[in-house]
Image (cartoon, rainbow over all chains, first blue to last red):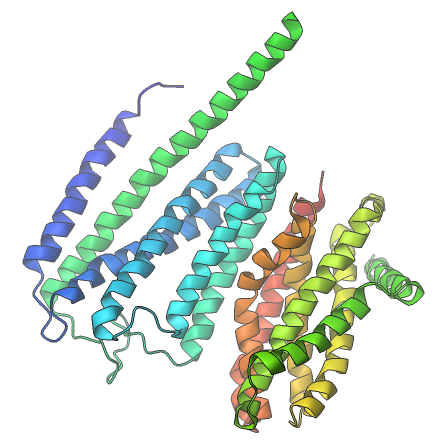
Length: 239
Length: 224
């Protein structure tokens, strides 16, 4: 295969860098200061974006896993691992940014609010994915079991969210119906909305870019392993 | 065809029950563990009478989940240790029937354990747990738990880490089920049975989805 990255990927790198930089500028200079919470509210743009990327990755992984079970093609397995790996990091940073916001607004880093708890659970569900992979030696089994687990996990996650919605929550709902009397809820102005949507788009590009790189990396790893194996076989034979 | 399918499920269920009668291995461990946890919870939580109705449903399902994990693990590991799992798979029958048979026997084990657990909870925590709708919650909750559990158990038993892995995989995945079961039980114990209906529906949905998933992917887990 090609030694350098594909041209399209390099283009995507450039676009992503520009988009994320612009998003950061928008957040800092364009979006207005929220009246009550002040500067800390600005974490909202990247908080939602990172979590969005997290969920996007878990969805991508579930689709890739279904495809892997149907076709048995290695590249789907690479895609699933890559997507979950990236999403795990993004989801964690989503939780951390939320924590940073919660400290001044809710006066605590962490509450056992159902939505926070469910976010932590999602993180654990997918951390277990890697524990599962590590405890399997056969490559084919690893891919197959991981695919089954990724599907089951992705079905369980929305159900966790639904069950959480059915419980009471103190987490502000910005998108969807506005609930009054919840600390931290704010009315979104058009400038905020533009910044928000722009960040979402920028992070989606960032995700696609990282995913592509990670899949290439996975393929390289696979290639190097086969090369190593072939060399060992060769040495065996020549002995 | 349809009758044969049910016969396979019945045969596996019967085999597991018979084994358990001949040499009890799975069920006693589950029950003893469950009873132990009642006492340990009591110490750990410095239990106050005012907290009864709030704590009991949570403790009930926590106990069920943990000793359920124990039972699922053991029941599948037995098959693996004696290589009888391969024999089951060699049999010229549908694999989903093997899965359903295994699931049915574990479902029954958990229900038996809960049947012992509920009166004990009633006595030790002094709450009235004799409600028909609570039995329904137990039925649905443990059905969902075993369908996810046997699926994850069949995966974990084939790994290096075996026993450790099952709770790590199963507990987070079955969390929505446990939330719904706890909430439904809490409403019923508090006497507001009509509020438990959305949670009961939720349990049914979870059961159906996980039965469906297990049905579809069980083949790929056990194939060599």
